[in-house]
Amino acid sequence: REPTEEEKEALEAALTGRDAETKAPCCIKSLFIYPVKSLKGIEVSSAKLEPEGFEHDRRWMVIDSKGTFMSQRRNAHMALVSPRILPG
Image (cartoon, rainbow, N blue to C red):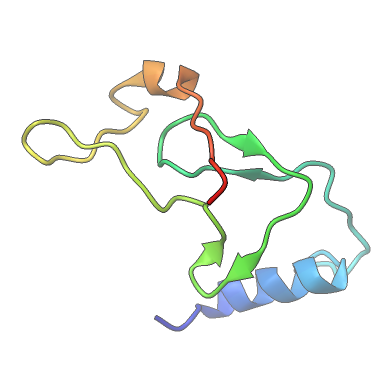
C-alpha cells in the first residue's frame, strides 16, 4: 500500500530531525520495535526502515485456538512477555 500523507510527513520529520507540525528540531531519545503485536517491545539503538515499516516491527501476532488475534486490551499480561530476535 502507499503511505498516507500523515505517514509521509512523519517519515520526513524523522529523516530531517524536525517536528512534523512545528518544523522545530527534535531528537529521538529511545527507539523500540515490537516484533509480536501486543507483546513487550525491544529497545534498539537503530532500526532498518523497510517498505512495511521498521525491520522486525509488528510482523507477527498471537492468535487463540479459534484463530482470533489476541491483544493487550483483553489480555494485559501479554505486555510481560519479552520476545527475542535470533540471528539468522
